[in-house]
Image 1 (tube, rainbow, N blue to C red):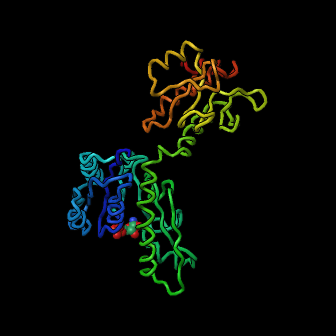
Image 2 (cartoon, rainbow, N blue to C red):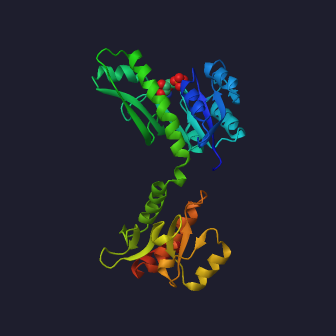
Image 3 (cartoon, helix red, strand yellow):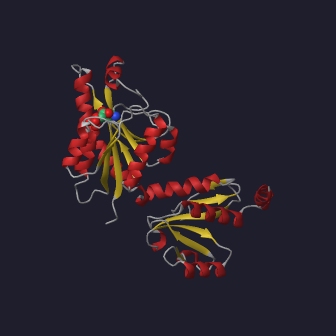
Length: 321
Ligand code: GRF
C-alpha cells in the first residue's frame, strides 16, 4: 500500500465532520491519515475529541491578530505537522489570499448547500424559503473567493414538507459525514486515477498551438496542424498494445536519443513496442511521482518535431525575445 496522505483538519466548533474524517481514517485501506486538528478557538469541543483519539492538536485564537498574522501561525502549525493537505471542517474564518495560494489544490472545504447555490451562512433557511425540493452539501477546493472553488462532489438531500432549518441541517449533516471522507480519499489518490492522468495530458497537449485530439487504434492521440494534414505528436497509453501501466508516447530526435533515455532512466522510460524502431519513447505516468513540468516540456519538444514550419518559426521568433 502507498504511504497515506497527511491531512490537517481545521475546525472552529463541535467538529463532527472532523470526527467523521478521523473515524474513516481508522480503516486499514483509508488512503489518508489525520496528522493534526487545529483551531482558531482554544475552547472548540472538537479539540477535546481529537486529543482523546490521540491526534495532535493545535489552537491559537485569532483575537487581537490581523488576518494574515493569524493565518501564518496556522500555516506554520500545519507545515510543522507534516501535512500535505488541509481539510476545512467548520473553520469559521475567511482566509487570506496568501494562505489560500500556499495551499492551492491541496485545501478542501465542506459546505452545507448544493453549490453554487447559497454560499455563505444560513443555507438551510435560504433553501426552504426558495421552496427548493432539495438541500444538500458540497465538497470543494478552496480558492480565494468564498465557497467558490471547483466542486469535487455533492450529495442531494430531499426537503420534507415538515422541515425546519434545524431538521434539514441535521439530515444534511449525515450526508456531510459520508461525502467528506469519501471525497478526500478519492482526491488524495487522484494521481493514480487513469482518468485524472489522461485529463492532465489532454489539457497540456491541447494548450499547444493548433492541436486537436484524435483517437488512434483506440487510444487518445494529439495532432498538430489541420484536421486533414495534422501529424501526431503524442499518444496516451493505458495498457495499450499490451504495454504495462499508463504512459505517454512522444517523439525523440531518433534512435540515439531514445537509447540514451532508456539507459539514463529505465524506471521512467521504455520503448513502445508497437512503434518499433521509430524513435518514439514512452514515459511512465503511473509512478505516483510524475513531474508534470517535465511532461509539459516533452510534449512541447515532440510538438516541435512534427509541427508545420510556419508554426515552429513563429515560436522560435517568440523565444528570441
Ligand atoms: C458543517 O455544517 C459544515 O458544512 C459547515 O460547518 C458545519 C461544521 O459542523 N462548513 P461540524 O463542526 O463539522 O460539526
